[in-house]
Image 1 (cartoon, rainbow, N blue to C red):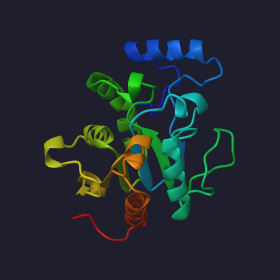
Image 2: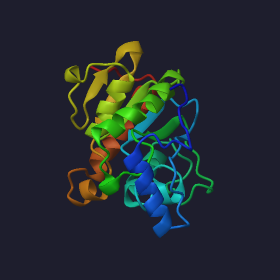
Image 3: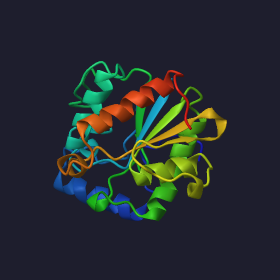
Image 4: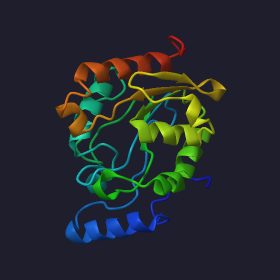
Length: 216
């Protein structure tokens, strides 16, 4: 798989069937694989889990239209990685600066839970994106599944890189994998992830992407 995205992909039968069902219930929703969004020459690549039912699956842009995007885009704006603090629709004026956002799984999974096989099947797109993004210096994984997907796409051994919030991992080729808890409604409302915690990670990612600091 050499393409970073296929808008007509239906390689995962369960996901394809679920999207069809959601489209019947919500005919105005996007209900297709969601493309990466942002600067094609980005130095920072942010990898989430998958589109949300009423977020990216509705709007067609990662982290747009649901709770998870509120903290993400506000923080990117704070650190100069976006030209606005809010992502309201795929056709608004929002642009990312030196950053891009993608997902480990490009299609909406039932209950926001892709199976390991679905993550594996979709991983070729992430692998192609990393291969075709020579400017990317830092990869920020939002959650353990995204962390594992990045390692698979980078052909790294997962046993050597343990996920932990704020952890930095030196990958082959000079890239850095930085971990964060996902900015989901559950994580923020339970305060597993606070605004301060997330801002610290994004700030660190921005510094590393600009060539400052070094991963341990």
